[in-house]
Structure formats: C-alpha cells, structure tokens
Length: 315
Image (cartoon, rainbow, N blue to C red; front, side, top):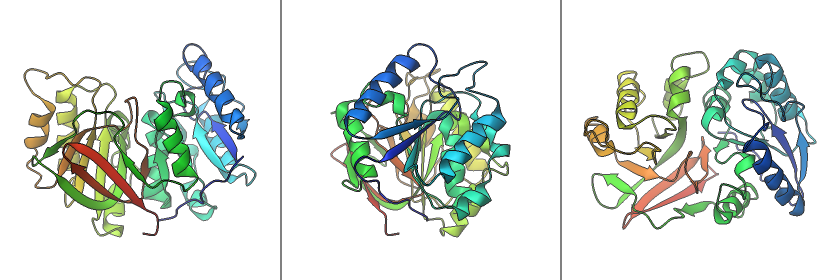
C-alpha cells in the first residue's frame, strides 16, 4: 500500500470540488468559517476554479471536475487534497480520471466522504494508494466537534494513529461482547458503492486477492433505512465482497428506526457471515466522525461497548 507522507506545519491544502461546490446555504457559510480556521492555523489554501459553483448537482462538467482533481493531485506545490463537499453524481468524473497515472505519481492525502467514495475507493483498489474517508473541509470546526477536527489534522501530521469514539454512546457487536480484529480497511458510502460495483472502477475482489483476503470492510449510509442496508449487504454478499473478511464495520445510520420491524441487528444477523461485526460506529454521515484511512492496515477493538481503531502505516 502506498502511504502519502505526513504533512508539515503550514502545509498547502488543495481544495477540490469533484462533486458539489460550496455555493448556497449551508455549504458556503460553513466553508468560509472552516477556511478562516485553517488559515489561522498557518495553512495555505489553494482553491480549484469550480469551488464556488453548484448547478444541476455539480460544481462543473464532469471532465472539468476531473481535470481539476488530476491537476491538483499532480501539483507538487500542493501537499494534500481536501474535498469541499459531498454530492450526488461524482461517479460521472470517473471516466476522465487516470488511475494508472495516479499510481505512478507521488501519493498525497485526499480527504472526503459520501460521494467522494468515488475517488477514495478506487484510489485503493485501482491505484494501491491510501486516502482518508473523513469530514469534508466545509465541516471542519463547523458541523464537526473541535476534538474530531483536531484529531484529523493530528492524523495527517503523523501525531496520532489511534482513535476512540468521541461520544459516550454504545457501539454494538456481533457476536455480543468485546471484539478484536485486524486487517486492511476498505469501504465508503453504501449509496455510492452500489454504483461502482463490478465496473472498471471497482476492482474490490482483485484488491482482496492482492492482500490475501486480509480486509476489513466498512460501510455507512446516508439515506438507506434498515431495509435498504439489508438489500445492499445481500448484494455485496452475493457478489463475494463479504467473503473471507477479517471484520465488518457499519456506521451509524441516519434512518436507524426499524423498517417494518427489521432492525439493523436483524439485517446483520441474517447475513450469517461468521465474521466479527461492529455497528453504530462514528463513520461518515455522523457528527462527530472518526477518520477511516482507506487502504491502511488497522487494529479494531470494542471494549465495554467502546470503539477503538489503531493504524499501522508500516504494513
């Protein structure tokens, strides 16, 4: 796995808009607050041309969004890339991205979640490059707790590689009780992953084979209720994505209430996977959120219903 270098003080951040731009409420207001906060810490922000656009659910045409992303990734004066927002149709930029070229470039950190799964996931599976599934820049010190925002920067700077849940709420396990497992993280947002499955931008099964099935899959959902999650997990299982996993992690659901009496516990137990499962984890569309280093080797534990994750960047 190709790990980018940790950043230094006063690093230059490339702000990209591969999906939505930060036009309109609340994106613009939150971004301006986050920008000011980062600049006060000494960071220099370089904004892509399309950042303040949002028309027809995109910051610009797919080929332009892709070109801006590729240009920033290749620009050695930019230390890491941070997506300004999620969105809806980032998948349309994929035909214009060159993952073979990215694989030959010096790796740099990319941060984003939700629709940014469209870049985070194939960075690992198609370019063997780690990235961070975490808060978009417009959430930094706005929607996200200061502790979560600080923890993300500490990760980027190599100051912190172990994280624990921020809130005093239980994390659940199957089987019930304390759990410990380790493997290589891969995953993202369910609503986005289903659009990538078995396309040329997927390569999940090849990734699992490359790393000897030493994979922990993490997924979370923005819109799906418990039945939506159940359907997607069935699909992933039928395609072989859930076979021989070291563990499965499910993020907190926005729509967590049982649908037709089906709970998230029901959906997970019905899989009969015989692998450790952790759910209600602070991943993705939740505030606060724990950064998932996609492609990284990680040790996961739940002790007394509390979630911990530790990254090993030597593997």
